[in-house]
Each structure stands twice: as C-alpha cells, then as structure tokens.
Image (cartoon, rainbow, N blue to C red; front, side):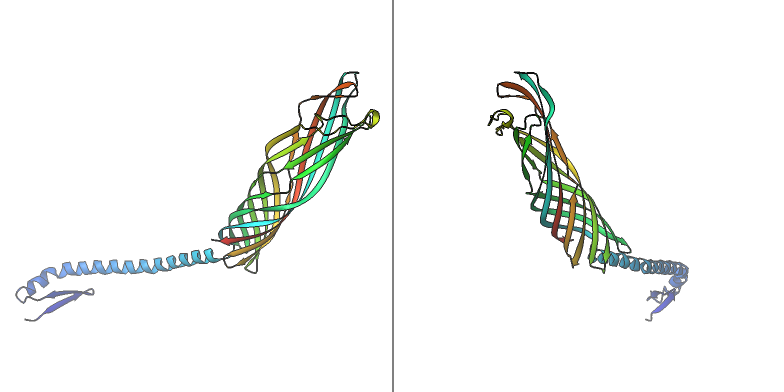
Length: 309
C-alpha cells in the first residue's frame, strides 16, 4: 500500500487508504485549502505582531533598567548630622501702675532686648524621590525629621527708666523635634554630581520659658534698688512653622549618595503676656504688666549619606 499526500498552502493531507483515497481527496481538497490558507494567514499575523511587540517590550525594559540604575533617579533614604549656629533675640517690656503709696504709673518703664548666639548639633533622617528629567535638570521632593540641642538660655538685666533699679530676667527658647518637607531641584554635572537647592517648610512644637521678678525680693533702697529673680516661671508651647532654604552638592558612588549642604532657617517668633501681678517694694504696691517676645534664626552645615533604591 502506498501513501499519497496533498500539499496545499504548506499543509500536508496524508491519505493511507487506497480505497477511499480519490473520494477523500476530491471531497476535502477545497475545505483543506481554505483551512490551510486560514492557518497560514493567522500564523503570519502572529509573527508580525511578535515582530512589533518584542522590540517594544525590550525597549521598555531596557529604559526601566537604565532609569533605575541611573544616579539620582528614584527613591532614596539616609541620615545626616552637622553643626547649627543659632541667633536668639528676646525683648521684654514691663509697665506698672501704683496701687498703694502713690499714683505713679509708666506703661513702658522697662524695655530691654538681648541677642545671643550659640553653636550646637543637629542630627536626623531624610528621604525623598527625584528624577533627571531632561538635559541634566533634576526635580524631586524630600522630607526630613531631625532634632537639635541648640537651645539658648538668655540672662537679661532690665533697667528701670525711672529710678535706674535693676530687674533680672531669664529667657529660654527650646525647639522641639522638627518635621520638614519641600521640593528639591538641581542640575547633574558629569553624570555623578548633583548641585541642588531645596525650599523647605519645617514644623516643630517650640517652648519658650521666662523666669521673672514675680516673687523677687528687694536688694537695695532708693534709686539703687534691685530685685532678685523670682521663682515663678511663665512658659508656653506652640506649633511653629519656619521657612528653610538649603543649597548643596551630592556625589553618587553607585547606589550610595554623599551630600554636603548649607541651610538658613529664617526662624519663628513666640510672644506671651503673663497675667498682671502685684509687686511690693519700699512701702508701695505696684500692679505690673509684662510682654515677652523671643525669636530665633539659624545657619546649619550638614553632612549626609543615603542609599538609592
């Protein structure tokens, strides 16, 4: 027994039974041709689709891999520490109205301002995301969380403008833990260097404390009278916001990033007005009113290290 085959459009139809060979071939030739033609067209369409899709997928994958591996692209997180130089300024104003032994009054008999500078440490964490968008231009955003020990205590002597007596005060401004966020932009130089600027907004719950002469005692008489600082403290806490621009440079060592930055904290201000109180001295009683104001600004120099994901 022999085998005859029919080839139509690259399809083989094999008939092994001589008895039914002619009948089968005649009956199925047209159907077989249509079937094979349809299969061949589908195959060609699939091949053409693969030819289009495979290069596109390869291109997208290569771009994604290159983008993730490129310096300064993607997410990063790290730690930083540095030095802070803070300037603190406190203004205290007192007025009085005599309530016994006379009728004297002066709404501004003490008005003293003192400015102090102190160096301290700052330390914390930062994280962000960025991308080199075009022609080396970089854009991203960053968040920071840090603390500082630069809390200035000021010892102030106010002089009575009427009798030149001395009135001591103590003021302290303490900044709480800081959370900040802001956009970061820059320019990539030589592929692995980034010069950047950040416009940060920082939030902290700050505390200001004043020790005044509420319970002070007279240390002299007449025009040379002075008063010892009392044991009563006036203190308040408030959530404060500060604008903190920053500039710096960053170097990429593979996925590791090292930066050096300088920031300027424009600072915040806190005011309070303690309740009026009575002071008795040299046979007279006075109702005293007081306003207290403290503000700060700071310059920071920070070194940071981060890892790019």
